[in-house]
Amino acid sequence: MLLIQATRDAVLKPLTTVVGIVERRNTLPILANVLIRKNGSQVSFLANDLEVQITTQADFGVGDETQSTTVAARKFLDILRALPESGDVRLSLDDSKLTVQAGRSRFALQTLNATDYPTVSQVQQWDASFSMPQKALKQLFNQVHFSMAQQDIRYYLNGLLLVLEPGHVRAVSTDGHRLAHSGATVDGLTAQMDAIIPRKTVHEMQRLLADDDTPVQVDLATGQIRFTFGQIELISKLVEGKFPDYKRVIPTGYTRHVQIPREALQASLQRAAILTTDKLKGVRIQLGDNLLRISSSNAEQEEAREELEVDYAQESLDVAFNVTYLLDVLANVKTGDICWSVQPDVNASVLITVPDDEEFKYVVMPMRI
Image (tube, rainbow, N blue to C red):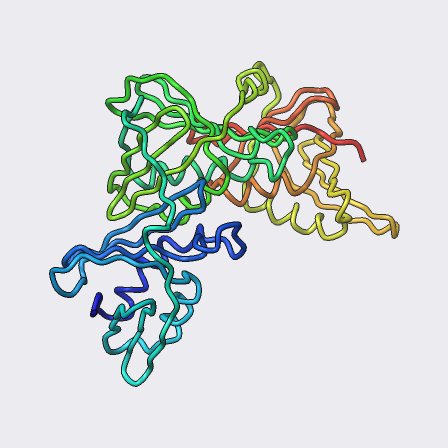
């Protein structure tokens, strides 16, 4: 039975959308497959890893029949990518084989029964819903994602805190050594709640969201979040646990502020980072006499020194930081200058903000080197 006939790129687009969450190793073999459902001309592609589920729609089905199957996602993707761009791709289902034909190329792929494919059970009622431009939500995630923990035993840190307030949404992440905070206004939002979005879900949304003003609908309930935009629906479980009180971490009352060109600081830190060790990524930051000095060294007694002219004539300050934490924020906040706020205390954290965005705040704890 012929299921689909379309150009290679037309089939490749929805498959690429969903295949990102497919793990190469699964406890359930069928989760390495993508679920293809055809209902007349409408075809849906669905992938699921039991935590995140992505579905997308396309309109290239052949005939009025309803049919569904599952096929190895990455194998199918590799075949489509290897086919020539010109000409149509035909997908046919016969017995337990999915046949992919394009010109004189033909592949017969093993399938697994669609009825055995696990799908996420959606909640009956959402507790909070709002809509915002895709580029605004993408920017919100881009500004904080790099501070999420990776495989921390404090599992609630392995994700992003989304805080809903009337007319406002915030995103916060921390790994215990640094914290990133950003926010945006949202029209029509009346609910007040928060949720921890898993790390994998955040990265998928960054990949899928467009840099335009088309809307993304966000629905929240206990234990589950749903994003709907364009032809895509992403449903994810939420991380259970109590996120740290981020308001207590963000310093207030800092009196010493230095405005620094972002690209110049980034380039200096990148050069200084060359002579740091893999285990100890520390750089020393010294402020004084209208100069910001950056230095690093390693076990081979090698040293790097950088200087930037800044407007700072207060007492000298000498503090060390993990250079990776500083480079992360400079790579993700696209602005001309950053504001570096400090206190005259070697144990005090640095607060990094940007002149044109009152919502963004990045806090880095000092380190000893």
